[in-house]
Length: 432
Ligand code: ATP
Ligand code: MG
Image (cartoon, rainbow, N blue to C red; front, side, top):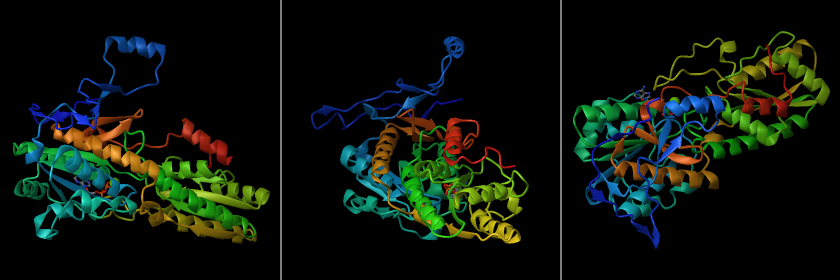
């Protein structure tokens, strides 16, 4: 695992950050590391004594900078789907650039990577602390976002034309792959521009991150939907509260929302396949629970059970597969199953998708986003590039872009989180 962070060159400029008030800034250098693994065994430790353990560079202010802040121009772009905290990150970057480093030229590209392609005609915003002061009170991204492939050459042309030295990309796996291509094109042209990513994923599915920003806000909003589903289910004869939550490939939101409320009877996630029919299938288990309890709550992640629907829904503008609506599918199948058995059932289906992703970040995420933004600016002014900031074992770290976009973090059906879900719901571990 290559955790080395690319650098544009030697850092020759002293930082303006020496003191914040009377407190000396907590400078870090590249020798400060966070270990990849904190769980270990004695045999592993003995093995590792011979080789050096994998570790990540620690984020934070550097004593010397690659860029001269008074002559530095910054660009910010947000891409992909909405997620709580996007505005917080933009605001954090703008404030950190202006107030701490004295970087006065900060542009916000409009509508994702589209805004970096001049023929679309989206004029970038000029961003100042006053223009972002209230941004964190609102969900979404005030810069706008988009999907769809853009030409990397066009985007780097724009960075050259505008004299942008540092580009911050706030986005998901697709955006970070785009950021990696931009970094390579910059390098190919022999330019000295830093590209730093701030990973966005409402599903908490990016590798090598403790958690992603917005996740806590999102699952807190999801919990409200689950609570409503419970209330609805108990208010009708044989009520089934069915909630579809985000989670295309990873079921973290579904798992956490279920654990938070503990009135959930079934959690269905993409990582754990299930059958509908048959004596051990989901519908029979649902019937059994309904007969015993009189009401049932089911939480399903949007990517669960796709294979049961036959797939083949095509792809979106960015090339991501489109998924069938598993919530509506389950609603139909549950109704059909009980109709055949002449048993009354009242399915209350709740799909809170946009309510979960477009709410403003909560206080916990406000803090997390501010610290990510600060870390991103510290890294970029020190000339670090082709990287993103994240948190690992509670510390903010630098990670190479390419390492993180190799795969996805998933709920491991053999590990503690899924076990906790099974304990909390009491659902059969195997619905097939
Ligand atoms: P999310 O999926 O969480 O909403 P995302 O960043 O993955 O966020 P996408 O729509 O997949 O969202 O991608 C955002 C932008 O990144 C789009 O403009 C897309 O064209 C670009 N992009 C996606 N995949 C790649 C890739 N492999 N290489 C270069 N650019 C990419
Ligand atoms: Mg994506």
